[in-house]
Length: 162
Image 1: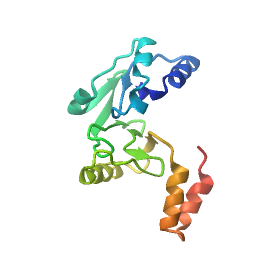
Image 2 (image 1 turned 30 degrees about the vertical axis):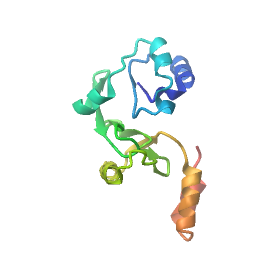
Image 3 (image 1 turned 120 degrees about the horizontal axis):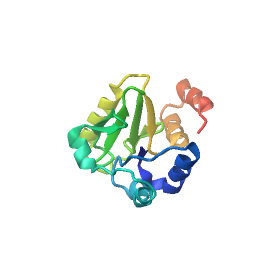
Image 4 (image 1 turned 120 degrees about the vertical axis):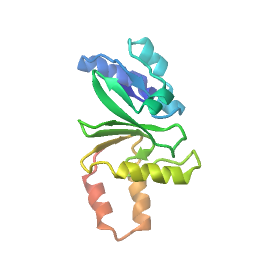
């Protein structure tokens, strides 16, 4: 499964080098940096490309017989979805979350974004979050300006390796 195929060349290279078969291409939202490689991924494979709106309404998608939960997570965009591989304890958030912070609220609906973040925080603490972008250094630098005496920020950054 490829989630947000904007980096199509890198995805296809990884699939080839790992000897994998791409069977599913999905998007967390419709920004071009996430959807721009969809055509290339689909033309290079026989992957299915289910409609995100239908996935959202259905609430799940099957990957090799295993269900993946699909949550509507508005905030970054109105159409944002997040994919939760519950058995593997993996959450694929696209731009709803960035590493170290939340995504930008392009939808303008801060209340919906708040509900989304609250829902994601209710998931098990051992869930691994894979975000759409890695802005950790910027986010933690901003956090340090807000809370200059917070040792958790320095501790986090000292152990961070992208």
